Image (tube, rainbow, N blue to C red; front, top):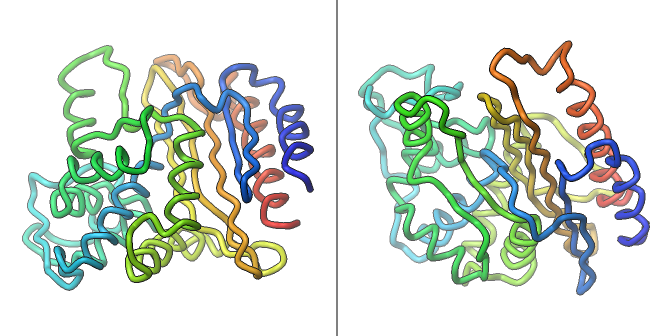
Length: 279
């Protein structure tokens, strides 16, 4: 499907969502989108940026992926399904923390990796790549602490535009922006972890490198995803999607006005991904 036809069909499917959604895609020099320059919350999708800087530092020799990092009690963050299985004081290789950060979006693992690479180094990479509309936190723990300490604060994990996400994945997956094949290969290996853990497969042998995100404490439900498909002949198609909805204090996604919107978004996302992969 041509990208402009893909855009028109997805915009039609997401028409009930109005201005609460956004998307973009790029293949070769063609880029299409809807509200692609408006900033949206995309939650844990920012962890791809951390993975990119981690891969770059490992490739340059600045970080040792086999270095063991210690899980302290004060490091623990909610939504850490993998590292929650380990006792305080346990150590794991930094590479395993990076894999957990992408595969299951483990927040404690994310913070261990961010501490090793440095959040300001991640921001410097984003600036180098031309991502002007993107913010990232110092850690996931900092988000939880502020949410706890400042009642009424609207949680922010990552504000970005779909243009920025597509620019990032095109630069890294297609243009070698991390500076070496070793860095690119390590990054792409990490970015396959979400598909591997979910058992996802794609048409025509396409490979998918992606990170999704979900932020659901009131007052907002945020869903986001960025990534890239690489076809069998090496063609790269970068993509980005987001949904931001008001999330009242007493709401649940199921059996509430949020559920139809979340379902509409998910159905459109399935269509969009299959078509971009070649299906």
